Length: 502
Image (cartoon, rainbow, N blue to C red; front, side, top):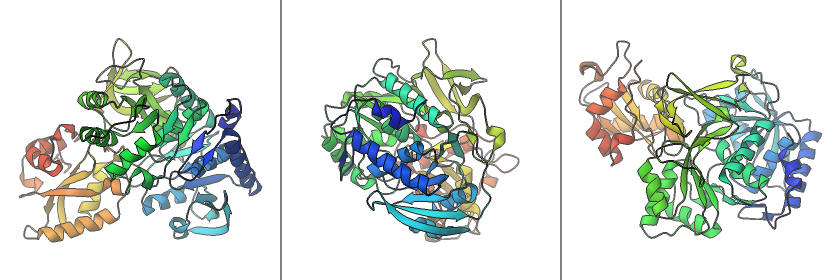
């Protein structure tokens, strides 16, 4: 399959194909920018690039230039903690960083810094590095390594080829069926869903991709948002399509209830990254937000199934894309047809024809996929961040202050915790100080924003712990339902109450 730039050449020249707050690019200008940067990268004999930066047209140019130059690209999520960035560089043979500022990379352990130069008229910096640590082996044809938010402190790198990325983009274009769509990117471009569905797909359709900075959208960190700014940005650009997480959809609906009018141009709003209630989707359509739920994962090159304007069923995640095959094995969703090449550094994961998703679900007689829950104890926040509660709990109890910690936050905007201090006489302020210290070492999507103090340890409460000391989450959540309600100010029916003690 040809690269995206080659396919873009065959499309009629629109007035603008790529836009951010500072400039607009026609098709030929985009092609020239990408190929000029690709030539620079080739002249430096670069093999693997880490791309780190705010949403901008330059981010897209760097992405497509690496594709054009046959260079492996590693987009670094802007919400990664310094520890996660360090892990990434310790495990991959990255030899170049393209970024807006180099501060994040000058203090990485065991990294030697080489030549540095400005590219794209000085808007981005190209920093060559030498990683002293061991480098992971990669599957053949790896062009992009995408890291999810990471369910633990050391997320896995999903390896994908150009062919897989463009096959996915083309399938989405056919499913959504918008002619030359005007798409507004509201998620970080390092998110595979926005990267493929928000950039590649509109470009393949001859559409326009609008890329405001995250600050212009209203983001403050990865889990906080200025609602007014968010809505003003949508109104200003009047897009036809957008991609939202469930939490962003909640924010948009709340604004609409208070008088904000979504632009009449909106035709399709994809919602992914977590469970979405049928009631929420119905409210969205009532307020002229054409929201459609989908399901996917990076290991399948993002989108697996999607409700569309032509085919939609409530309480489902839509029909699988035509190039994918979905089956159910012992209740678990299995996907084949565009499986990842494998995980970086894990050869036993390479060349799998089928992906065991870890999600439980079913397919009805009409072919619509329904997700019922996760087989493993994994939280997905309403901002679409994967969080393993055991990781956060381990950080909380890894000190002399906290004895018990149970973390919740599935389908919620932030994490909360039930806490019991080792010293029953310890003041709440001192417990909070410890939580603050732990939070400072976590990415912001995994931090504990609210907590409830238990009046007795879990060991003294029957049925709260397994024989090996693991929390029985369903029992604990049911027992402390009122307290969890109060922590969120809303019902806990969106918190996963599945028993993950096995």
